[in-house]
Length: 608
Ligand code: M6R
Image 1 (cartoon, protein in one colour):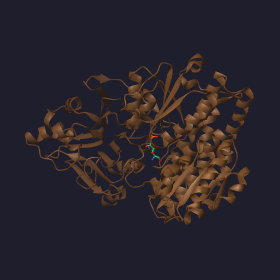
Image 2 (cartoon, rainbow, N blue to C red; image 1 turned 45 degrees about the horizontal axis):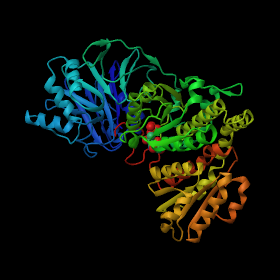
Image 3 (tube, rainbow, N blue to C red; image 1 turned 45 degrees about the vertical axis):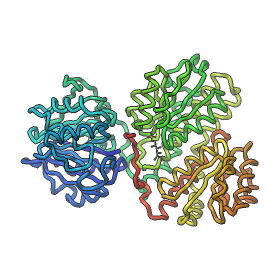
Image 4 (tube, protein in one colour; image 1 turned 120 degrees about the vertical axis):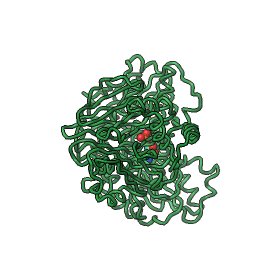
């Protein structure tokens, strides 16, 4: 939701912090702020708007001299975006500065108590209670004050804190919001995510829940919530530093769309050995897989959409009943965990609050949890019984593309593996599927080379107000994603429908010129979807048909047709999503919008 960066070391802190925040802007971008110890006081600057406003205001940090500081880029939860509500927040004496990612759920009660004691609040944020609580409990030992605050607050937080009394130190703590600590010869860093520090160091400590760290030039000391000293082992990040750069593309989204063939190859190749699928990470014996009675897939947003495809593919190939649920619904509906069931959590970031809560509920009920996660070492990955990583690399654009595609392929691997073990497909069919799977990256490369055709079509629809996506089966799952992709970055209202469902209400919205994207790649369902195309066209809709080459007769029904290559029906989503991602991208571009940072959104939703 928000990005935190902090630095203490031998270099001027502000430029390093601002650079770090620029790599975290995907996490929040409605305001930003920074606090640096300048030798006498904690000097703070904050600005509403994108980070560049703060960057220009401080002349890229040159106006904030000092070697120790903390910074923040905000996605507003409590209090509108404004200079005042931007972080850091300080106490009245300007001796304690705090940046925070997360939500303090009991802040109302805490605020009332503090006000009764005479504390005055400048902002509308939940975070400000932390600055005043730290003041209340501070008796000369920052770790002790932080501990006391942690024992009293409810909710989630990653915190960066400075105390004027301890000017050459940064303190940080976390619970349910990500935070890493980096170290190198010249300094120490705190950050919400790896890209913020990748150009300085690859040595990181992943902070666990309810841990505190104290950083100075001399030491890196970790404590638990009771103030007891703890030992932690650093990890080494092996990311390619250029992976988090635009690399010549105008936007991260376009770059990430083009990275999909590689990301899929990286995700499937290590798991295909001698014409078999090897999923060592699964944490389930072959017998346990054969005995599986039910799978529940839980996720949010696009990750949920991959779950919907996963349901079709797992049920079709492995013949296991699959339920798919939105994490925000699942966690509060007292779900049933049948014996012999498997829960799969899907998440790019591995930090999504609702998905994490669903995971914890399942684990509390002794359900085996497998997660499909992109960010290595993230909370969901660490708390699951087993993890299948998607090897998409860092995904920066808020609108997911390559992580979505990799999640789909992990579902294909799972479905094929389970099907083979359970004997629900023949060895020959398994081989055919495997060949098709291996071919997907090349087929996507072919599709990407035809992007101008999609740009041409997109440019005709820049002023459209409503778009409907319709399809059946896997095509419907795909429509959910195509529609979300479009609406989140173009701000055009769009809806996805199971094509057969339109006539139960939504068809009343069809009128002359309504744009309908009809996806019809499933051979068995093709005639049914064509009938639905005829129905909406009769009501005046303009239909863009998306199908495979054998179905050339689509040109007799739709007004404009896009073809994707043929693959196995259950893998079609991996190909048909490419034109829909490009369509969303070019509509957003044509409307002059901020493709990578759409309004009101953040990449990682670490609050409810
Ligand atoms: O990090 P996660 O995969 O758990 O995130 C889930 C959703 O927030 C995410 O897919 C969101 O819907 C994207 N903006 C879609 O592009």
